[in-house]
Length: 135
Image (tube, rainbow, N blue to C red; front, side, top):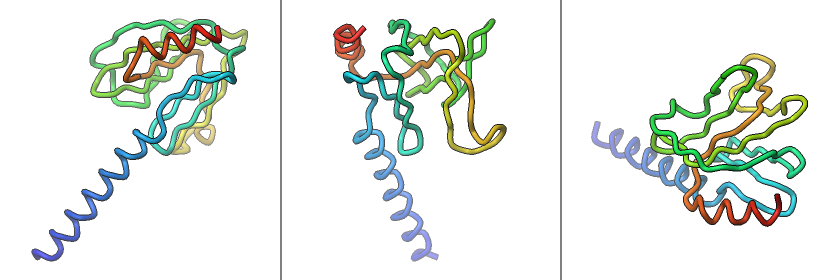
């Protein structure tokens, strides 16, 4: 029994370290092509500067488990939270929603139409300063 517990414990620690590395090595990025929103190994969404209308900081506490959609009026926002909150909201205003592919399949093969994204970044001021260079 102890051997099984040891194996499960080692596997669990290895999995947690892998998950931590996925978040540390694949952060959200801002560059000349636009903003890339990443969430672990499964999510990598690229938004070009033509797609992004504005980027603003709106602190929201107690966001639901991520990923989740926040639907209000005609908008559908994809929410990626960290420790029950987000601190940057990327608002994408288009004539038509952007279709993104999310893991897990489900309806439409995992494809969902969104009009905005809310994410957590470690340095919101630096993130916004970099965005200002391009918007």
